[in-house]
Amino acid sequence: MKSIPTLRYALALAVLAASPAMAGDAALDQAILQLQHEWEHINYELPEKQRAAAFEALEQRAEAVVKQFPGRAEPLIWDGIVYSSHAGAKGGLGALDLAKTARDRLQAAEKIDPHALQGSAYTSLGTLFHKVPGWPIGFGDDDKARSYLQKALQLNPNGIDPNYFWADFEYGQHHYKEAMQALEKAMHAPARPARPLADKGRRQEISVLMAKIRDEAGDQLSLK
Image 1 (cartoon, one colour):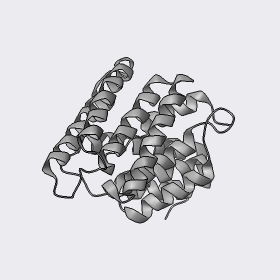
Image 2 (tube, rainbow, N blue to C red):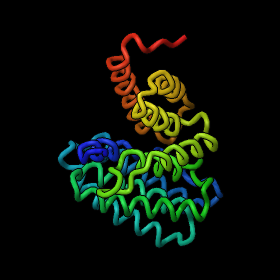
Image 3 (cartoon, helix red, strand yellow):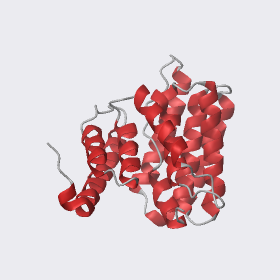
Image 4 (spheres, rainbow, N blue to C red):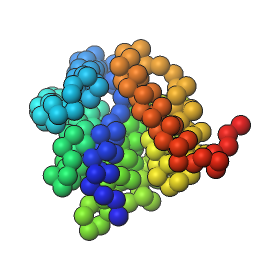
């Protein structure tokens, strides 16, 4: 069973730097980009102790974007991402309700358009199901996690986020070589010009996980 501290750590990472909508809706694109930039500021620039309150405030803005663009998957995805981030910042048993809300938002987005934001709903759902504790505490399920993460990679095989979170999943299964291969791919993923802070932060997380794998795997790790 996964621990509550693991949930806190995981949900702090279970957020995506998905690109804005590409459906020609300039207003929606701008609204999503603003949420992304606010999320980046909170996640990468604010002190850890201030993040929970800041993410809670951002939830309200994300909900407003969902209402402004009903029937669109993109706002629901970012609403789910913000709830996941709040859960990670809050930690403990109280994070589980936030994680459930994130799951519900992401699954609603999946039903509308699973391809939205290059399959970002799949990546977040996979991470949630992998890292949230399983029954009887939470809804965690590694089989569902694997399925979601593989779907995300099918839609965005070269993306920094799906490769990073797939690596984290493989690391959790003690598949160190596979995890490192995915991390190498994530590290060399194409840059996102509108998201330099998100790219920088994600690459720092990639480096941390690489170092952790090297420390744990030792002589088991052999990459050509």
